[in-house]
Length: 256
Length: 236
Image (spheres, rainbow over the protein chains, first blue to last red):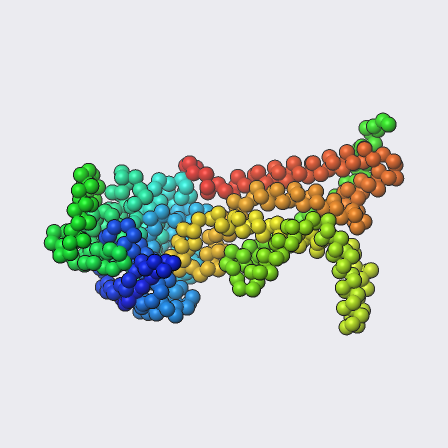
């Protein structure tokens, strides 16, 4: 379970998050939509303290941190509750695919090397990369790299996986691969928070959609409510513009 | 004046006996300086309170003054300091018993530390911030992330720069002959003065320096190829 209360964050006096309250149940898949600059990525990064909120309480699992007086130890503890998939993959460049997945297990979870290797191979099989175990990230396509990123997060078996625009840097052709992997994980009942611009993904996979603008959650609801019966004018305008722009949506078919 | 070609070989055989000293004067300062360099680079990157100013001053001073000056100041100043301390606290240190090479090594180490710290610092900065964030995201501490993720990449990328410094310090070690430490240049000077054949002796010394440099460049090339293989893409 994730619980946020009064999360505030400013960059150089520019308020980016203006007091976010949020509760996410175990097993829920929550997508965050919103225009750029709305604070959705910052909110995600505040969850694992890659950005330290200026105020507010973050709870993930049974770790509760008051961000105003968060110590290094607390930040580490809460980071261990989550894992993150990055927009630009951020795989460890000097480690092979299997080493990338093993790294967190060995260092942070203190799993024995041999067990870590077994677990990693199993997870990599799940994302369809069993044949690339000993390749370096630079030898993989963007889609393959992102699947390693997902495997790296998944292997840690965290309380929640945070996805930061996981398909934004990919070739349109490869987006479908990655989305279907995320979708299959979602069906296993792992809690996920996904920042995305993939409307079809938000619609089909998530249990709940948040719409953010200017540092606040403008509206939240089930995909059905948000996409077909949005209450707020701002939400409707955003969705209209997005759907207006995407005449060409081959992605939808691939996800299905 | 004529050139005595066969004497170059005779001089070469005599001068190369001093090569171990030259190598010690090159390798020891670089290894010790490497440790200083990592420490100083980290202090400056993380702007650690107070230490940060000292590190800045250290790098600025040692890169801003010639190495010959460091050697001279330490060679003449250190014994003075030790004598005073010895006198005051009755330590009974006899500075004239301290081998000269120790002073030279200290001076070169301090200089090497300042140069290496800048190389390491630029290497660390060149590793993308996303690597650190990814390390944090899987639950590593700052130390673990630095140790396992950032430094290996930073150091691998810095190999050409390290080679540069090695070659530079190989040649800089020749300054030690000014305080009568008999390394390659010192030996060449002695051979030259004794036989009055300066040109031949220094040609022989030059061949030795060049030979070592070529060897080091070759090793560096192979090492770089091996440790940065991850960065080259393509399918192996």
